[in-house]
Image (cartoon, rainbow, N blue to C red; front, side, top):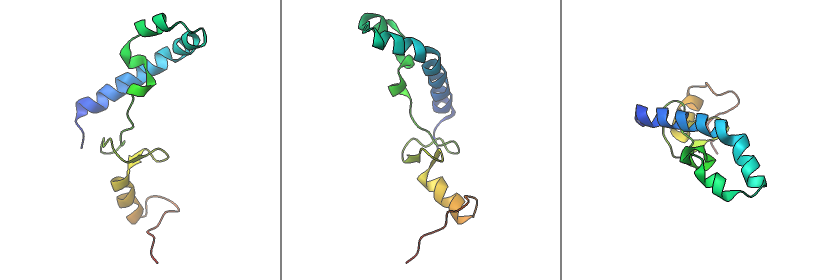
Length: 89
């Protein structure tokens, strides 16, 4: 389980990325890299990290469900994910 500060930091970075998205694209199109460098570091989308919405885990997070593989398996076994069931052969 990640700390609460990690979750809030990612939320803050996400807002910053959205705020500067259009400006970053304009600067990239005009190839004004000096102005692009002056933007805040958190305005870059590469600083974002996919976190599990339930646990905050940062690794092995499925983009489609936005939850980690561990929680996805638990929810699937409980029957809470429609159309998903445990594989057996």
